[in-house]
Amino acid sequence: MQEPIKHQSSPAVACIFDLDGVLVDTAVYHFQAWKKLANSLGFDFTEAQNENLKGVNRMRSLDMILNWGGVDKSAAEKETLAATKNEWYVAMINKMTAAELLPGTVQLLADLKKEGVKIALGSASKNSAVILERTQLTHFFDAIVDGNVVSASKPDPEVFTTAAAMLGVPVASCIVFEDAQVGVEAAIAGKMKVVAVGTAANLKGANRYVKDLSEITVQEIMTLIKG
Image (cartoon, rainbow, N blue to C red; front, side, top):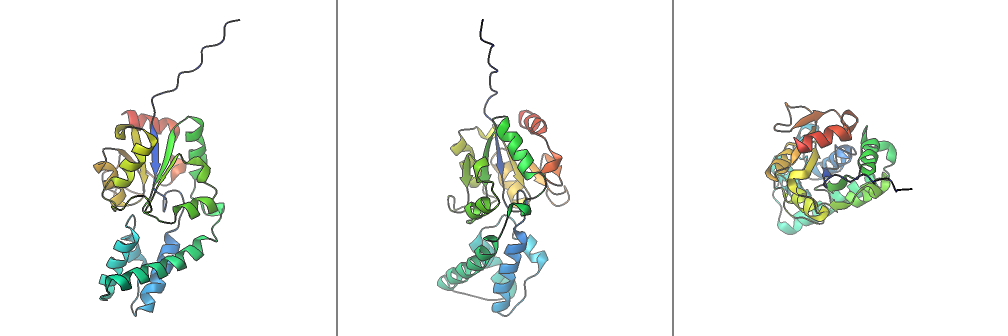
């Protein structure tokens, strides 16, 4: 009997996910660690200020916080402060579990994997490996691009274009999932489509807006990429 014709796979496409605020909610831990650091330097740090740090790397975040507090530090002192904040933060995230994943995360990643869509992480975090391991997400990713791999901060598109290159997928066939304005801008600069986790009022320029990843399907993603 003749063998059935196998289904031909579609051209390679890729989904690139930011980490904090998209797959997991670690913003609370960043806030607690930065607030502890600010308080140790004699000033306070608010949740509103923390919102401005979304998508910003550690040293740039520190510079912004010191500026808000009116504190001037040498380059060496800044390195020490950043390391101290990170120690506090890592201690917190080492207690994370899969229960802290945001709604829809596992289902969407599993569906993408089933359909053969390539998946990458594109995050400013230098602790992404720990977070992915603690929340049991590591196995979903074909590439991990984070603050240990790239140096330029969003809105520079380096983190996303590097991910596309590692996956071997053209930027036009990539879609980025972001919850920060600088991340949306980075994706646009990289010539990629963007799904924003948030509202149009706060995240301008995205192609689609969702409350969380439970609000979008693989089919809708494919339509967006091809549109």
